Image (cartoon, rainbow, N blue to C red; front, side, top):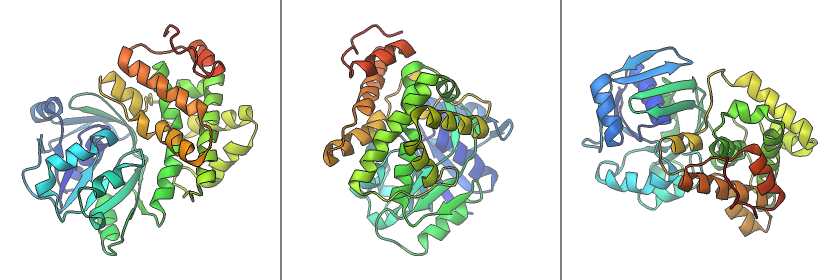
Length: 343
């Protein structure tokens, strides 16, 4: 039995914590005060794809004992503070980063020795809106790898533990796997802008085509920057490149069909919309914003991703979502009408 600390008791942290606890591991969740209070009172309640169950799991606001393994499940913007707050008990402890974006490994490496860090690409779909309660939409899988110097026994050890909760694969190109996931995640901005589910986004002809156009900007950036992509268990490089070559309407239909086949009937909100509904800051700067940043460095225009980043930021500040017609107008005018009324 391993002593596992999960720093970040949101959708992903709670899902992994519950599944690892059910597998017999010694798990402690580290979360915000309202989440800690709810779990202490009523246990961690889960429903969705794996049924309804409650897990009694220790929970605290800060580490008080050194774990054998730490999982970092906070948003990218909270990575540094979360590690620094718990730093004395994380030294010499293998730490798995679980962020959607690309920056967390480098951020953690500024505080902890790089050889401790294991990077993970997460394909779990889960929803966390109410303290103490998480809906598992799809248990998915994990892909792990070394972002820096390799310590040979580390990856098999980590994979052996995580496999008890969720299928875990080892990648020799974890940065390429992260970039592929980022291209898939360009759709995350649209539920946040519209307050619609992923299913509703792909059911709308304009929005589904906008997803393809956002992806193609990202693919152009990746290509110019010479980044070697790596396939994921549920998304291949071949599919992403096919979506980049087909006519936009056909590519949108193909992507929509894949969503209908593979995504549960449970509503998929996306992590960015969940943050907005919980009145928390989003990590859009580390998702579509990462494409904009690298595009500027590589000399590749990314106007669509820049517009959706700005729109998410406006929703975050004002609490008002956009309708499809307002998004159309913003795209048509190159973002020049973002002062227009939100729907």
